[in-house]
Length: 534
Image (cartoon, rainbow, N blue to C red; front, side, top):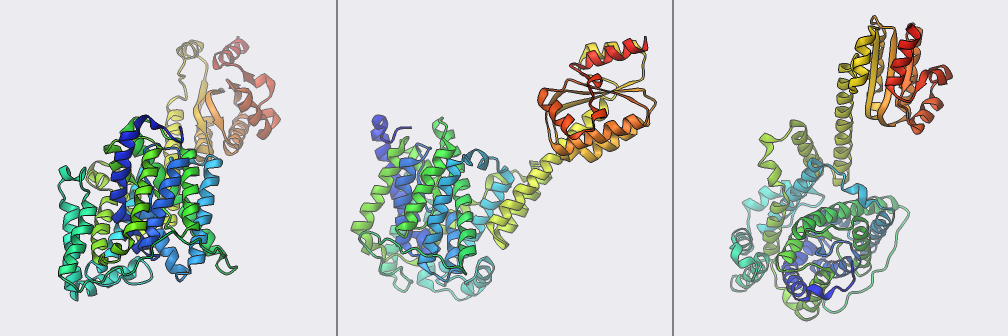
């Protein structure tokens, strides 16, 4: 992917400018919600948007502060008591971690997070954003300390609203929800809400305003990390890096589907990491690939890196020339815009199809959602991904055991079956297919003990369809063979690849895998049995 591809210059120009206009109110709102201030949201969008586009691996991606990232960043800001040096040190470390994740090709694995887990934490983040902004909509600050205090503060804010704030906030909320889709291409709803809500507040004063916003170029942050804060900073840096990576690569998939292209996951992580590192150095809120802004860019013709870079330059011009005007924006107007953002993040696509989804997937989604809202994001993702992996392994183990239980006296090769029937001998065939792992060992040993008690003389273990075996399964094979030998059965092993044979012989006793027991195919093993009987 070229740094400067001018083949789509007109489309990238329109897409980038439009994305920049859409990003303006969102960057201000996210900066305000983060605790670092509106200007921090803008600098985050500028630095991350430009450098993630320049060095990233998704041509049409527009990056900047996002809802999920702001939720985690705001929590970090609160935990560190607003110490900007520590806060932005964590952002820089998170960016470096992202770069390392790309260098070591972690991008290939992040996409393996199951959809119910992604759905749950995205919906949970949407709920958190809404809960944090409802009090601001009514003119009050949310409760400090996280989601639960914010939820508890809502009834008091509703019971005692500041009416000028509530009025302009409801105007902004109504505009972003009901702005005609036909107008979006020419004038985005969030920008309309920002302008109309702010103008209304001039004629109906009393709403709390953002106040003075610094103008000019950003100041390089002083970086520090103390021994007592080391664990907290590193912990949150890892959370920011992982979340930013997941968020960005999900948006990359959306961009791929819309443009019929394929992104480079690891290159994208490197670009996002460089962008977040520079955002931290210059006091910007960290972010990720932003779905809505990316979609707007693509819909208006953006296809290459230039679109993301132009989007950032548009924001830079606005910061340098129009910064003082942004100070007149009411808090409740930004709250109205963010409530719509939170609503959009909630996975309504999944919720509308709950009745048709597997119960396990729905349970997993609700569990991750609850953990995201009431515990923390990283715990939710780790537990969700772990449970999904365990469930998948168990399902695969059940499938393999079912297959083994049904083929005790049959084989998938018709020639083997024909010879087996013609021999008239009491022979059981154990046929492995796919991988054999720790998940199946206990049940496999039990099943084979039961089979050894049956009225059979020979057991053929066919490894022809087995392409992977772990150490737990190898030890289980050893136990199975020993039990069968002690029961007076004759054992033959067939179809082992050199790699499988090496593992079996390394972890099984010599008498369990001696040369006279091993054959290249199950047919040869069966022929040997018949020959020996004749």
